[in-house]
Image (tube, rainbow, N blue to C red):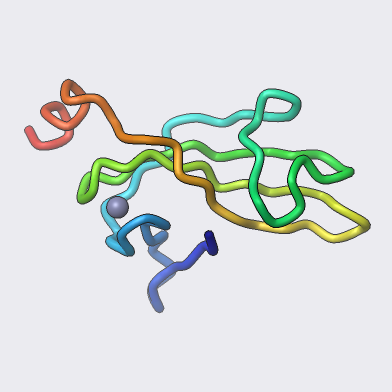
Amino acid sequence: MSVYTTNDDELCCPLCGETNVHIDGISIDPGAPVGTRVGEGLGKRIALLGYCEHCTGRFALLFVGHHGVTYLESVAQGHIGDDLVERVAS
Ligand SMILES: [Zn+2]
């Protein structure tokens, strides 16, 4: 999946397109999620982990080095738990 922002540079949820997203973690290879564009890549793989209040989807924004280029893509990671949905809503 691609990564989008609004014209005001607000990050959009890669799953639903809404802007109520939060980054709450980071993962660096070899434990980082693997995307579909170049797989594990040949260079470093760094992921920002986040979730969306609107659709409750979790996602990873992946920076993947491969053949001298850094790719940026997103990967779906399931859904946030109900306890987090309640905390976010209050
Ligand atoms: Zn969403």
